[in-house]
Image (cartoon, rainbow, N blue to C red; front, side):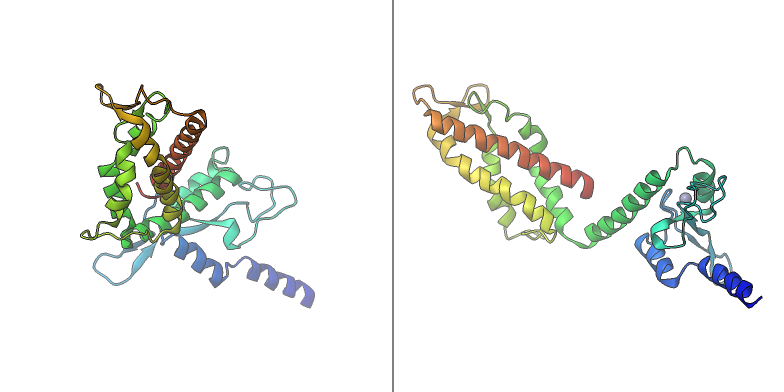
Length: 255
Ligand SMILES: [Zn+2]
């Protein structure tokens, strides 16, 4: 009898979500539904307090019963932070009834993406990095530039010179932004662009001149030595990849 009581007590306790896991769920989601982003505390009208519409939904069902949402044979989900996702009551119903859409993997992705976006959006709100990223993109059309880097031994875009000037632009003192960036990843992506621009600069000065259609072309009278042709091609290919990596990171984290 005592054993049964102990088992029942153990079961009741294990069904509870530990305070540590609740803090993680609500904290990392900024108390918002991970699907519709609705704030999960609605202030009461004409009285103190809040209506709480948040629910800690299981990814893998707590019950092993085969009809339970995302139940896996013989494997019960638990009440850990890892197996829970913070949702509003409406979306909790959706994920538990539409299990063909809301698979275990998809729910994990939704939760990871949402928590990550909360972190990034709040970081961006308090850091000057976003202003500088926006300023760079409004002054330099990097997207257009990389599509003109395909045939460096035939032509280079005229605005390649802008990239060479970009370091001076970044270090311009009279601006309410700061460089280097606070986000170390941004620095790691910008440095190779600046470095490659430095490497390319002497070749442009030696071998290219503006054409009458507005780009830079190799000067006919100056044959570029084969080893320098290879160097130019290599630098420009790396520059393309570096700018592409920069744009991709900014698109995800700073748009
Ligand atoms: Zn929702």
